[in-house]
Image 1 (tube, one colour):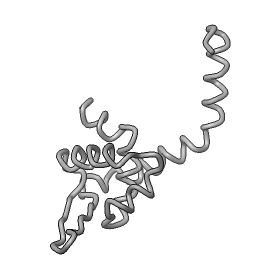
Image 2 (cartoon, helix red, strand yellow):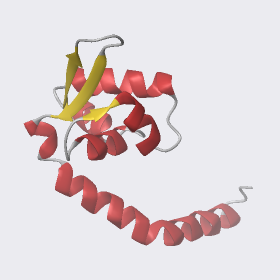
Image 3 (cartoon, rainbow, N blue to C red):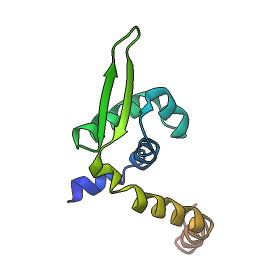
Image 4 (cartoon, rainbow, N blue to C red):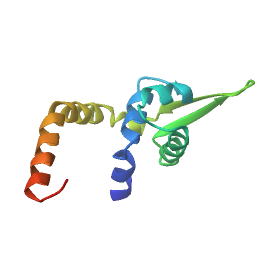
Length: 110
């Protein structure tokens, strides 16, 4: 269970899964939609999500070949909970930052 939660809760996985859930998405679209992710990290995360059965990778023949990623039915079960989690994080972002700053002051951290 921990391995699955670590994968889904990884720094980049949530953004990728949310982007791929409405329909197929290309690599270049993901680099734009998942803010701050490097091409290498996107590649690694996509491979891991595909390996875990959360993404389906489809290669369309051509020059250059076109690759699309789509959330699997298993990943689509996560869509609403992930939306709720990201909405919660947005709502409480300021409070969390303030709590961290207060904690750091109390414990002598810079």
